[in-house]
Structure formats: C-alpha cells, structure tokens
Length: 76
Length: 278
Image (cartoon, rainbow over all chains, first blue to last red; front, side):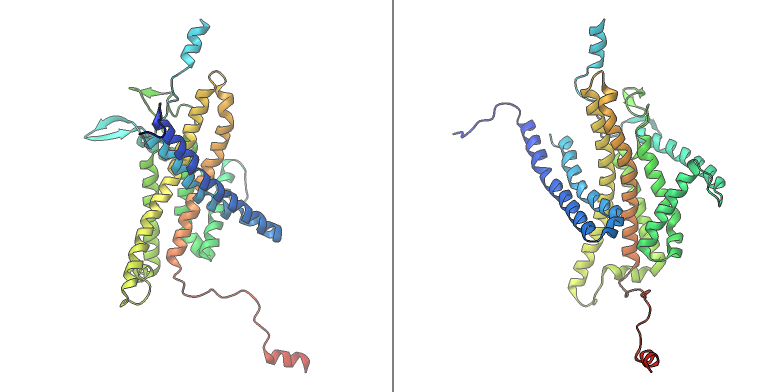
C-alpha cells in the first residue's frame, strides 16, 4: 500500500534533494567564517591583514560544497 | 535561413567533459588531451621563465618580469611566515614558487580560446587544461607531498621524522594507533589537495559551459561574469594549494621542540632597578 507514489523521474528528484540539502552546510560554514573575521576586525582593525589566511579556510570549507556539486555528475 | 542558423546554435545539452579523452596510442599507452596540453604548458612555462630569469635586474623594469617578481616575493613571504626564518624560506622557495606559477598558468590556460570543444580530433577536444583533469591534480598533489616528506627527512633525519608521527612513549600501544592515524591523515591531505584544485577548475568550466548554453546567441554576454570569476578562482586556487603545502611542510619540520626566542626586551632585573633608583 502506497502512502504517496512518485510518477516521473526519481533520479532528478534525488539529485535535487542531494544538492539542496548538501549546500546548507558549507553555506552556513562560510557565513560563520565571515562572521568571525568581521568580529575580529571590529575589535582590532589591524587583523585585516589575515585576509589571506581566511581565504584558505574558506577554500577548505568550499571543498565540501564542491564535493556535493561533483557528485551530481557521478550519481546516476 | 534564420531558422537553420538558430537551430545550429541550439544544442540539446551543454557539452561537459569530466574525464579526459584519449587522442592516440603510442606503444600501448593512451595519450590523452590533457597530457598533451600539460607538455605544451610545461614547454611554454620553461621557455618563458628562463627568459624572465635572465631579465631580472636589481631595479624594477616593469612588464611581465615584475609580475613574476611580485609572485615570487609573495610566496617567499608566506614561506617566511610559516617556517620562521628567511634563510629556511630561501632554501625551499624554488620548489614552491615553481608549483605556484605552474598551477596558476595551467589553470589560466584552460580559459584560452581554442582549449575545449573548438578544436576537435575524432570528436574529442584536442586541448584540455592540465588541472581540469583529476589525473593532473593528483599528480601535482602527490609530487608535492613526496617533496614535503623528502624535505622533512632531509631536515631532521629519518628516525626523527618517524618519531614525529609516532610521538609519545614507545611502550604505549596508543602511540602506534595515533601514528597510523597520522600517516593516514597524510594520504587524506594528498586527496583533499588534489580534489580541491580539480573540482574548482572543472566546475568552473562546467558553469561556463552551462551559461554559454543558456544564452544561445548572447552566449558571450551571459558567460562573461563567470569567466571573470574563473580568472580570480584560478589564481586563488594556486595560492591556496601552495599555502596548504607550506603549512604541511612547516608542520612536518617543527616538532614542537619549544618556542622560539622572544624578540622583546629582556625584563628589568632587580639589579637594574636598584641602579636606577639608587
């Protein structure tokens, strides 16, 4: 007995759910990094020189977002 | 007539390549298009930098030489910040500066006209950026990691480098577990370096392909912002690759022996206070 039946392409549905749910984490993560950086610069304007280091952390978090985007092409 | 012109512009799906396509065989090895482009990039790179190295003078002269000087200074400054002293930075600078410029050039050459589906040979693109191929970035990350291990062993000896992983008393079985985990961590770092570079560049190509497909006649206009974004991403990803490699090197060399000497003035001793007051 079916509660709900999906007619149509379930692959596209799966890909959409994976993409949407997967991008929440990195989005929040990069926002948190920006928040911390802005707080630090607000307290001590000399710490704006750490922008290069911050971008390295952003790249580490972006890796997760890109993994989700790349698995879009791997999952059938 | 307009119909046939428009129907030639419209395609079904944007053409996206993730894996490189083989071009021809040579004694049983398949030569792929990214291998060919890697050789071409290396050749251009070697010739260009030999010419530039001869043109470097003490006073800045402007032009492309100055861009190379700025990049070298940047990477050497990063090395100096991580490793601590200028002479150690100069010892390892050639390798990291080369990796920085080679990866930046490889990324940028993937955006040139002609690289991609414009020139095809038996339905496969002839040129394809070296870093837009997982094999290429895996090679770059593996070589970086091997060189980092070689530098660390040359710096502190083989047994001491192993003790860096298996830190703690040798009779404690937990040391071996932690050591195995640390070695596994090194391999994961290779994978993450390779995947980060490959995914950034390949997804940039995919985004440009999708947006060129969406704007059928106005494709140059719709893809232009993403092209500019890709220019930034190319140089940024090269910098991040080198920055992370330098961080791994500094982690492997510094064993937590102790803090370096402070640069502050020595504290005032009781004798000096007595001299001042009396």
